[in-house]
Length: 305
Ligand code: C5P
Image (cartoon, rainbow, N blue to C red; front, side, top):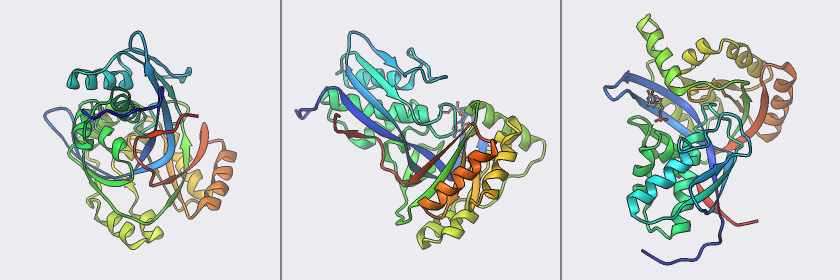
């Protein structure tokens, strides 16, 4: 263990993710699906403020739908790290949420990743990123990516990562939904649609990786695809109209993010994204509209304000 001083409370910022391409394989025996995906972190972030407390508690500023007890993934992460290391004291965690809840942008996993980073710093735990990622994967398939950020190929159930180097900055408009979607339900709906004869798209991540390597924005737009999209749209049919509204508003392409229902629309640059956001908001097809860009860094400590 190394001793270091850290300002208390610790503050951690953690990004949301979009899957630029999400290919879903078969249902495995453990209840998960094999994935082949290109993760992309964006600068829509949650911030966690973590301090020693009398017992583990979480405050979420009233963000609807965020679990408050031990079911909260940030609290679960603090407990897991404490059990794993034998270190740690109770913490109070305040979560300032920007990432949509149950939105398909890995907000819960992001908070777990942030809690792992924050508690490690608070307790002076000397633990490597790989060990943290392995711990995090026990809490949620997307936790390792929330730790690493950037752009990465994900395999396994999404927890095995290889970084993708790209110089491209991608500009996004995000269309939020009034109600969330449950990830297991969306995967279940995909299984149902496939059993009923819907064939998955056959290409994997190669077209997206080639587009990113070439810095070819039109090819990135062309390669954007999500095998969970049909299932998310089946559960929230109004997403179809919102997807069309985004491309009608001038976006290069639009997809459901992860298991949805948040929609991600690719734009040419920041000005274009601002323009598309205003137009999309004007259609009334989304509950809220935000702009973001990526790749963004993974969970990291930030200076106290
Ligand atoms: O890993 P995480 O807790 O985020 O997953 C939530 C649920 O989503 C799983 O219990 C499973 O039903 C579904 N899932 C899946 N295949 C994956 C990831 C998640 O079926 N690769």
